Image (cartoon, rainbow, N blue to C red):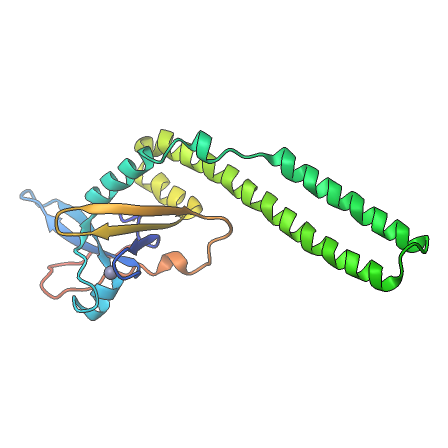
Length: 216
Ligand SMILES: [Zn+2]
């Protein structure tokens, strides 16, 4: 079952909680079972409306606002200009500097304490420069993801959408009110997702519902 594919990455902008799926199996007039997927703030599902009163969101509505948000992400070509050359140059300069420091030490131009201090400073600067490059790499990756989302999302089936979200999206934070649902932000994954993160989507049970469709 991949219907409720936003589950696991969807966060409530009102309380910070995660959303869980809330699935009802409707039976149509001719007896066909039609899953009706909704998302419910986990705080609310567990502790009731006192802890969070954000309304449930129907999957189709969530899909609509997500797609709209993706289409409206600002012109990424300007937001995500990435200058790799500059960072690479900085790292090369630093590496040269390290060779110089070692040479000076070997030749007896600087003593061990000076050498140690200079290497310490080098390590610090090198760390900062490497980090900068890492951030640029991530931005570059995100630019690709956003472009791919914009172009392909509407052509993907449920399974592919589910895979895409699990692979590339860290979180989608939304604010829901009785009249509308708004996507506040979408964060992209920068590393591996922790293993259990996506498996917390147990549908809450409700006695009055005839049957609850379980995920998986
Ligand atoms: Zn909430």
